[in-house]
Image (cartoon, rainbow, N blue to C red):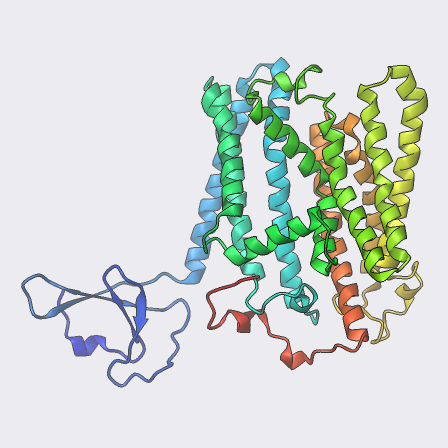
Length: 473
């Protein structure tokens, strides 16, 4: 139990830890400064003193290897996922058949926005990981500090979101199906309040500088009173793909304010937050109005005519949204023979115009002509190294998903909640692949304009992590 202190001072274990404190580095015996310990085999010592004894008591605590910890976490995650699925399924089956669809519909209404946001955070982490492995210096493009958040921190946030949101949803389903209506109604309210507090928390925790950067960018998007930067319109473009999130957030908050959570009354036509609400199309159109105002601001600053055509592209989404909403305010015959046809025509115009702009402007593929020149080093993709099949896939899938996205913008189709959730998830994937080529195109513009960073000057993710514990945007 008691050991000789000289025997403990091994040159292969130069770390000491006081009881209840973090491990500290120390030179023991013949140990040299800077000796690294192989990862997964660190043996920190716990140094303590037994009361009434002048000799220190030394015990050894063995740290588990990273591989063991990773497997342990995966097992716990699978157990958690199975438990949530089992409890959720049993809770749904407890409901009567005539109320089951409404029960699920309301649950999706509250948790669909945060689930989609969680998915986008995961995808953004993947984007950062791919950029870190390529020659694209995304920190320069977004004007980020060298200690910006890496994909590891992004994935850490997404893991917490992946655990917390479904857990709250499972609790909601379980409590509601077992008659605890008041407790069930509190679950989405607590979750939304917690998310809002984390975002606006004024203290230097939870990646304070990153949260500040996000909130500042959102403010600049909502009020484009200053010159538009790349992060401004980049995030605004992403928000247009999250119009469904904004719409569901509005309905969820409306139900919370009117204390209609866990009542299933929202499906009725005369509900305050129901289908006839004018706020639904207004919220759907907000991201497009923001982007349109940004384009007008860019034209004021640069006098470049393409910014006006870009503004026109975002304006084509307005008829799609409001013609769809007219279904609840006109007679069925007038909707079928007049407004429905106008809605289909405006949807086609918006989809094709957006697809054309993605190809020719956002990605600068010049209407497919450059696709056959990617084998040339000066024109090839920095990111995907000129793999032609990737570009054919992206162009084809972008066209299909652009047309599909119009389905989700249509307010009169909102009751098909499972279909809408899948369409919204597919739009996230479309925006995810759009990000690669949009950022790559911006990097090509920077390099062609004379700004070139030598490869040796571009820090790798591993190098940026060494010696730094603060990752700020």
